[in-house]
Length: 292
Image 1: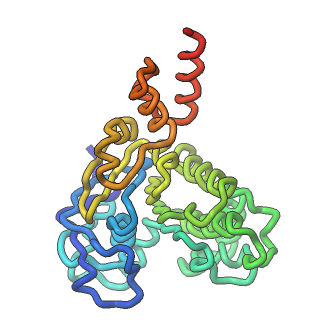
Image 2 (image 1 turned 45 degrees about the vertical axis):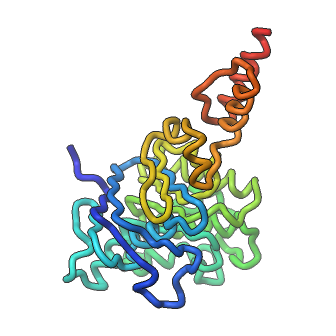
């Protein structure tokens, strides 16, 4: 069996022990004893209520935060080795890209194509290769026609696409989306989710989506639920959302279709179980009504 692209062992981080004011104060719990393995090419959603530790986990995997204890392995390499240098960290970020919640924090240039080129330029790539990567990345997110535009004049959803293009141009093995749809309208959210799925299913990129939107998470292959800084659940999406009472106890809800079907069953209607997506919910309701 091949080595997981990401593996953590006893990973812990406490904000109490790190007084840097730049840390996100909402992530009050940090993380404790996180043991997860993510295989190359997986599409994983990480869920948790505000302050649960899910974004802290994302920042640890990208070495934005340094753990107090435990280990992180990227493609079999222990990146928490005490002899790891800044150059080594840079190599990690070439393998594990990250798209943040606010794209304004990630855009660095005054022209879209220059922003997308920033990462490849820092890799020291030849100009011709940089141009190929920029063109390919902009095409992948549907923003080719905006190559010469100013990023600050774009919509929130368009800015997020440019931020994603900048990561794609680095050709990482893994892309972590850290609540990357939280500031977008429904149309922008849909576009970004479609890009995530295409990157995973067509390009084979490992996608980790840190989110609080249950309907987004239901589209992943696997769901990891973080609660009070610990992994409370790690299973395929259908299984993760099958026990609504446990989700509610952790301050979470199931996807809307799952909640609706559960409510209908509680009301005495013999509707299908094991429904996950909105599409499956619609199909199950149509089938129920046709049988009446």
